[in-house]
Image (cartoon, rainbow, N blue to C red; front, side):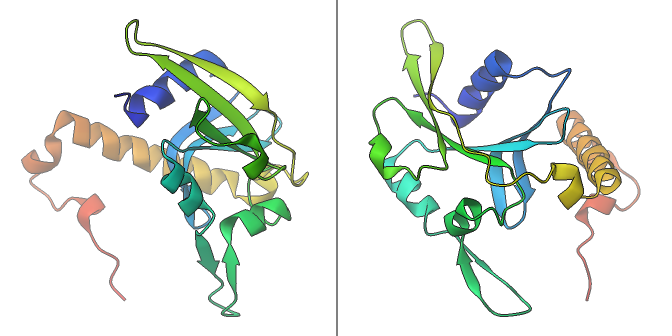
Length: 181
């Protein structure tokens, strides 16, 4: 069975221009994690959510956000469809034929894939392009300097994890410090 990490790798290496786009995987924005987030050179963003089962797809429409100030509850896809979401575009990446296209909201892009288990090759098909839900660039809605600092911190943390140095540190690891109220 194809793992989600292998699917992400196959997609980004066949569809992304790393010189012109920022490509992030498993990136938390707003209150949800984006499986893939792309920010182009003009600052427009596109989130791609991977769904490998019908139940996982259906559950995506139950994800909610609670506004701490007003107490109002919003569903994720209601926020996306009305343009009250940080990304300019949103798409689903799904196994070929898993979901009828008519059930997927019109603002969402649809990308289907076929994975050949014999050759281990994965093909991607753009079924429907996503609609741009608003015209504000990502950098108008996000502080670019803070974003870069967070990326640098994440890179350092991952490097330490990969090298297995957490156990070798003789000082307290700042990544393990919990925020104290």
